[in-house]
Each structure stands twice: as structure tokens, then as C-alpha cells.
Length: 265
Image (cartoon, rainbow, N blue to C red; front, side, top):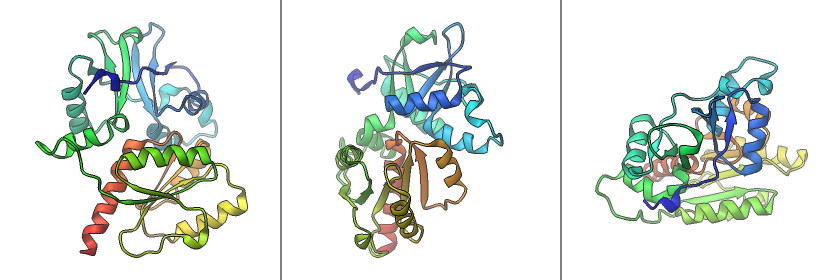
């Protein structure tokens, strides 16, 4: 993989930074992970949006958002070597199930030696192919799974449509309730952007989605809403704080719809 695929816009935050501030910075900078540093500028932890959703939910505290980020960070940090990226990313994903890979120059894990960040969403189909198919084809064929996006924000839809179309999905907007996918055939995956809807419209969509049998990912910029929703979700539904972890959503939709397709044969 070319080093041009490494993202250089890394966010380092002090270990005593409040969770609320970190969440806001991640949303503002459209990042799905941050690196945690100590007072000596050593990288001592990593936090992803999935960590915030999962661990934040488990914190039985009224002042969750005021807690420091080291409360939910993962340690130790496992780096990919800048000179051995392909092998390190493949190994770390297979062995540790990681989806975010800080890239280190040398062996000293100080902030100035971290040259970038790679996530599975950055590698998209190339790495999905490498990790899932030993010795498989160079490019994964387009699978054509149907995907519907419900969003009140046009820019959000455009961004998601572009990303998931490039990953092989047959993407379209779902703007009318009467066109809601029926529970027949290969059920389309649904991405429901909760932001931007008034309460009445939001309630109507949620009632439809509640009875939908296909895979659903809901995304929201409010971590409190995300935490409360997780209590009521079943195995076919996920909710995530923005920015959406594309790599996880891609893997999950593909897995769910592949099983559905096989069951129809």
C-alpha cells in the first residue's frame, strides 16, 4: 500500500481531557479516532468512536461526559511501522481485530514520530480483499448490495452515497415513507442519519425502522442519544456516534446481506 494512503490529520489529546471535549473535537474534525498523550508527549492510548459508544454506555455515572478521556482509552497502543505497513495492518487486524492503525516512524512512541493514521475505511475494498481472501483477486468484484440512506442533510447523503457506491453498493436516497423497503428478497441495508429531522418526522421513521427486518445503522452527533438507543437495539441494528466508522459499517452490511442472500437460495 502506498504511503499516500496514510492520513496525516491526527488528533492528539491530553490524557486528562474531558470526554465531552474530545467528542466535540472528533465531530468537528470528522475523525473516527484520537490518540491520547501523556505530559511527556508519549502516545499512551487510543480512543475510537466505537469505544466512546460502548464504554460510555457502561459508565454508570451522571457526569459521564465530564470524565477524563483516559477513563475509556485503549492501551497499549499497537502501531504499524511506516516501513512495514501492509504486513503490520494485516497482522493487527487478524490477531487483535483492530480497525485503526497509527503509523510510527522508528520505535519511540512520541507524538512527533507518529506520521499518520490508517483505518480500514481508508483501505476499503483492497484490505477487505487481503484480509478475507488469502491469495485472492487483486480487486474485489462489485457485490451490488442494495443500500438506502435516510438523511435530512443533503451534504451528509452525498458524502455517504459517494463512499458506499465506491465500495460496491447500489445506493439511493429514501425520502418517502411509502417507499420504505419491503421485507422481501435481499433486504437493503439502511443508514439512518438521525440529525436534522424534527421530532414528528423522526418518530414516523423510527416506527417503520422498528419493524424492519434488514440491517440498520443509525448515526447521530449526540453521544447521549447514542448511549440511550443502544439499550433498545437488537442484533440487526447498530447506532454510532458520528463520524460513522465506514469500515465497520461496510463489513457489517456485507456480512448481514451476504447471509440473507444465501438464505434465499
